[in-house]
Image (cartoon, rainbow, N blue to C red; front, side, top):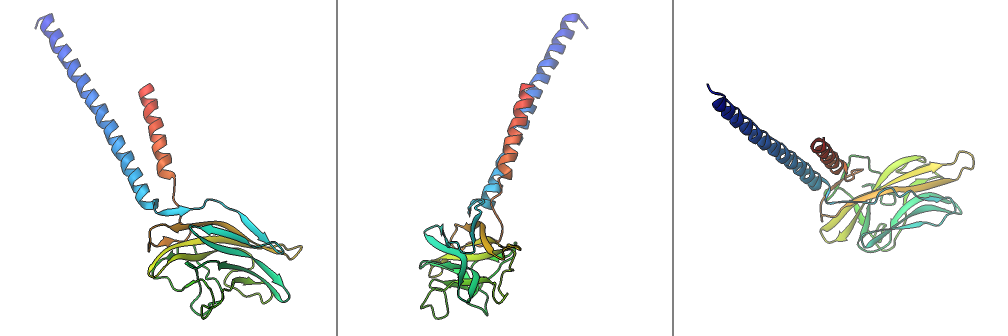
Length: 233
């Protein structure tokens, strides 16, 4: 076989190899793009409806004024009520269209949910403002009574209050995370709103403690950086 023919065959093989490698790189980039798009779509579908407050750390101690919390167009309030024989932590709703979940057998206390519980249409019992039996006057829902030592929440510890807002048969549901604490030296106590979240889809349920995870976006950023490094290398 002559040198010219061998050179032609070798050149054709190199060209075919270059075309094949270029096609392979395009397929790898396309697969990476499709994978990233799938991850982003999955993350969006899983968390797009959850509105999360972020870390709040709003604290009311014994003797402090209560704090109002606005969620959507509604307002709730929490604090420590002290006066005469009264000494308890509480949460309450302040306007029509806002409500809180209570235990079935105790409409004067706030229900304490555990992380992982589900709050939604079939969660009982959502009491709407004005809170209290008969619905004629608004009351504070007790979380822990420091006089009797009773309550749906421990004197010190963390729990979740379930809330809803809306009207008729259409409601949005959410949770607030609270931490109660007692100062061993002074005996004073405090309540802290850690964070809250709600589902902005009407009648959509929410898992207590669940928040939108930014992991997929971070993963996409890392994948993009790795891709640029490969190309630059």
